[in-house]
Amino acid sequence: MAVKTGSAGGRVPFIAGNWKMNLDHLQSIAFVQKLAWSLKDARFDFSEVEVAVFPPFTDLRSVQTLIAADKLQLKYGAQDLSTHDSGAYTGEISGAFLKALDCEYVIIGHSERRTLHNETDGVVAAKVAAALKHGLVPVICVGETADDLAEHGPSAVPVAQLTAALAGVAQGANVVVAYEPVWAIGSGQAATPEQAEQVAVALRAVVSSALGDEAGAATRILYGGSVNSSNIAGFLRQPNVDGALVGGASLDVAEFSSISRFKSHVGI
Ligand code: PGA
Image 1 (cartoon, rainbow, N blue to C red):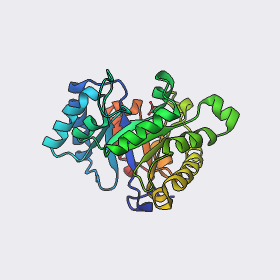
Image 2 (cartoon, helix red, strand yellow):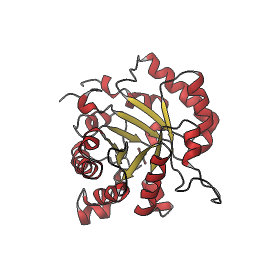
Image 3 (cartoon, rainbow, N blue to C red):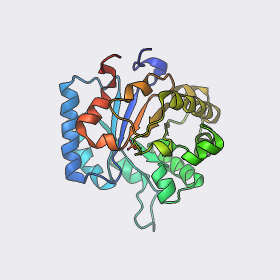
Image 4 (spheres, rainbow, N blue to C red):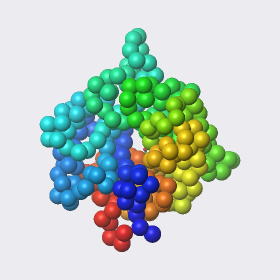
């Protein structure tokens, strides 16, 4: 089966690198420059695959300046945002500030935030609303733990999380969904492409019922969890998997470049 092209379902594949708390602003600049060179050398076509990096907050201004100055086609976003617009919220970052840095995306509800920062489905929904309010596209992360999987099966928890995240979101809103099984994140044990596809189908149905059929067809659903250059093509062969949210492998320029160039991999 062919890997989907930019026109399949109208959904342009999306490769997103979540750097988590890695790379300071100087390292970010060097990384983005090298990534841009690597993709340019490979004659990468950004109209066929969208590539975005998600650096720490303190790097965003540097990344913005570099991308604007060199007219790079790479996109970028933040890893989180506040539910509030401004005010007495020490340590928080407003969506308005991210928009002022020309961020296009913001990751919301990553499992590390749900677990380490006690983010509930209610907080995630408020952050989705805040992102949309400020013109940012939320990359909404959902996923089950190994215990959830054993107890509830593959789709129940991600479906419940996404349903909660989209409650109150307007019809036709522009969102990205990332299915990230917690047991696959950073474990080296990725889900199978078939597992990812099964959950992606269920998540697309949630988007359709919450945001309308058109949004359901247009929304990109990513897989995340131990994605690398060897397994990426298998995920992108699935009709409902439209890209990947990459953690560890996004910190290596050559590896992330190779993941972005999944279409040119041998045998595809
Ligand atoms: P991983 O992380 O690719 O290192 O498994 C994915 C993520 O947390 O987004």
